[in-house]
Image 1 (cartoon, rainbow, N blue to C red):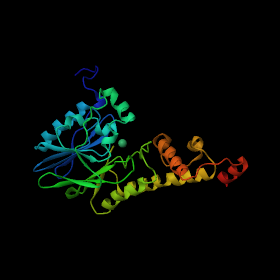
Image 2 (cartoon, rainbow, N blue to C red):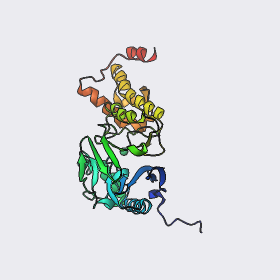
Image 3 (cartoon, protein in one colour):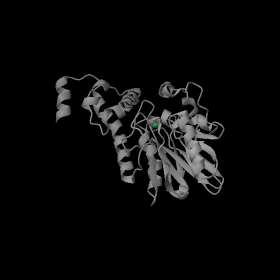
Image 4 (tube, helix red, strand yellow):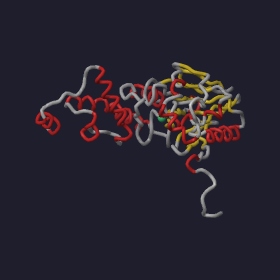
Length: 294
Ligand SMILES: [Zn+2]
């Protein structure tokens, strides 16, 4: 072995498949440490999310079939961010299970910008073919995986994959160990309610939740994250009451997560309140100072 440059592309490395339950595995795919799920039954296997690149998608499918010993018969998507759908082309001949709103996001500017470095252009991601609004089951022979819509949280089409007989939930990015990514397409107002679907499942003994990135999260961490997300709209309400505009929110607000993870979500919270006629109004500096420092 030489110490020279590696022939592989470390940034798109697919981690090893780890068994996490009965014929259920997860792998972490770089560069975003994104969770890829695999559930096998007697009638075939389901892959949950596809990694970041077309090559990674092909590797996921090939290694998943070798491990499961049955063909992959469907792929399910938790949402349409690049690190979850970038490998989708490798599954274009299979049913693609997703929320009915996902297809409308495959031409989003941000998604195309994120995929451009990997040579994926507009129109190259196949459209979902098995869509649903509330819930859909994928039959794998002797078991099913249920896909559930949780409402508008991280995106307007978040889906969780429930493997009930293994007591495992693949939760996508509605939870993240590093704190939620509250982007411009998130809704900080309805996100806490979306997490209640997951919390309801996790209240039962022995259940585990695998977030869209990184290691599984405990019930306590999920409920804490729910509370923190709920606090963002409240904090923006306080700031607006104090006459503080978005431009000052980073330094004047009390935020539970790093600003760069939540700034677009805070912007959106301002917009939500402004649409209801609740916007910052200029106040005398001395009044604002008294309110903030008492
Ligand atoms: Zn995401």
